Amino acid sequence: MTEKRKFTDNVWLVLKGLAMGAANKVPGVSGGIVAFVVGFYEEFIYSLQKINRKAFSLLFNRGIKSFYQYINGSFLLLLFLGTIISYFSVAKILDYLLINFELYVWSTFFGMIIGSAYYVAKGFGTWNKRYVAFLLCGIIVGLSISFLEPAQENDNLIFVFFCGIIGVSGMTLPGLSGSFVLILLGNYVLLLVDSANALFDTFSELIRGNMSFFEDPTRIRLLKVLIVFALGSLTGLVSLSHFLAFLLKRYKKTTYAVIIGFIIGSLGVVWPWKEKQLEYDALGNILYDANGREIIKFYIRYFPSEFSSEIVLAIFFIIVGIITLLSLDWYRKTNTL
Image (cartoon, rainbow, N blue to C red):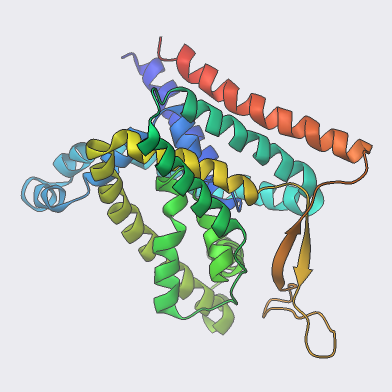
């Protein structure tokens, strides 16, 4: 492989990490879908699986180079670099778009998930009653999750560690949105917004030589929460990858049937037309969380009753989402010929 080709491949791997990280932060969308469609899902799972006892034995006995090569370190490092960059850049752009163009963002992701389901299903092969049963189980679980009511925010560190284990599921299991699970657990804003902003602000102040954040109890609390969440995410990433690698080796088609079901079921989460139902107190006043945000009790999904230019645009963005996903599939095929 030439140096130019190697550099290009590395850049693309970082960009794939960017896409994966951005998808992970959007409720209802799974970063694992990106890995699946772009074509590095199994390499991702099997690389994570190699972070095991043998890997650490190599680290202590032969050094970091042997450890790095064994776990496919270049692949994982570049992919996670893209994901981390996304956490502070692309994901912030998505936050802005969700606030200002919510309907069109949800429409685009709705289309992308339709495209994802088609992409995964078309390569499945022959279906039988067993696989259809697992498909239906995946759909039912995905839809059931989408209609659960969110819990209240909880910054207990043990619970935050558990959130990290569960929240990282979107990277390893296509169709199961880790960020949406965090919403259901009540900690999406705390872990993916407030803590991320606290870390960004801390880095900015450190670069300027400002150490005053040590005297800010709120900032210190958020940084502790973020560290525990990261540890939980790392634990979940490694443990889930071992479990999924086992399933892919022993029950590949069954696992894929469930994944397709999850993807289809997640359409309920990203359904574009929905209204927020807020939490009120006994006097009818809107309740806010500790950060001054309205507390969302649940969403009411509906079909638009009137045809308008807004609906036309939403349908247009659904089509854009489908085409975007199929374009990723086309890109993958043309670059593996």
